[in-house]
Structure formats: structure tokens, C-alpha cells
Image 1 (cartoon, helix red, strand yellow):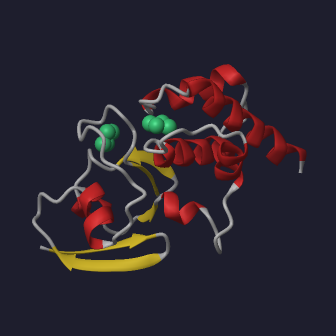
Image 2 (cartoon, protein in one colour):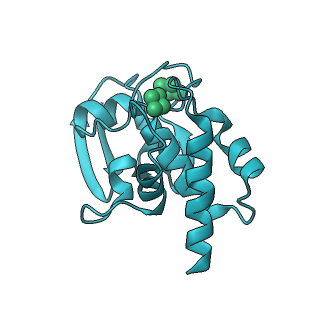
Image 3 (spheres, protein in one colour):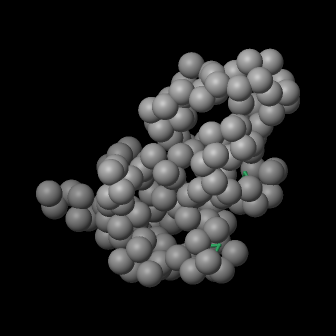
Length: 155
Ligand code: FES
Ligand code: FES
């Protein structure tokens, strides 16, 4: 079937199998490899994207279900090569190790900054519960997102 998806403000159109997963469309059709595949069962969060502003695990959706919606991947969080507040904080705090989980934490962190009133340590930790870091670097990641939220709110 022919599917057209809007990803990071750009339309991508292709003939794909009806069973094509959103994550596979993003990686293989759009060529956006920052969205990773860790488990394909909804457990790790490496495939997280924003769909009309809401975080979703793109391995749990068919590409066809995302037609007509605005998809943002980790590549779409930066503008003109400038990292957003969450990405900058993760980088400055050296919060990531191998980086495999970067898309999940960057997407969730961005959603937290844009949607949560309360961004203390416990709230951020609980919001991040669906994203797994196999390098087990949770503390610096949570702290980096808490700090990014604090800095945003100062401005
Ligand atoms: S690959 Fe989607 S949650 Fe792990
Ligand atoms: S930094 Fe390696 S999986 Fe998170």
C-alpha cells in the first residue's frame, strides 16, 4: 500500500507492506536512523517518537496508523544543527554512554519540558520509566532532564 508520512516537517511517500511498522518506515524509508530498535515489543523505548506531540513507541504502531499525523523523531528536536535544551543538557552532563537510548530519553525529556508542570526528580524518574538504558546510567540522565527543565523555567 502507498503511505505518506510527515516526519520532522517533511513528507515521505512509499509503497510498503501494510504490516510495515512505523519504526521501520522511519528508519528504512525516511532514512532517519536515530530512532533505534531495541526490543520490538514496547519494552525499551529506544524507538520513541512524538506523534502529534505525544510520546509513542514506534515499534508498537503500523506506519499506516500514523498517516495524517505529525511525527517528530530525535533528529527533529534540533533546529539548524542546534541541540534543544534536553539534548544539550544530556550532552553537557555527559549523561549518555553508548547513546543507544538517546532517542528515547531525548524525546521523553522534551515531552516532559513541554507538558509537565512539576519536573522534580521523582516526577521525571517516573515519566522516564518506559525508557531503558542498558548502560544503566539513569541518575545522570534524570538529573540532566531535571536541570534542563529548571533552566527553561528560569528564562
Ligand atoms: S524497540 Fe520499541 S520499545 Fe523497544
Ligand atoms: S547510554 Fe547506552 S543504552 Fe543508554
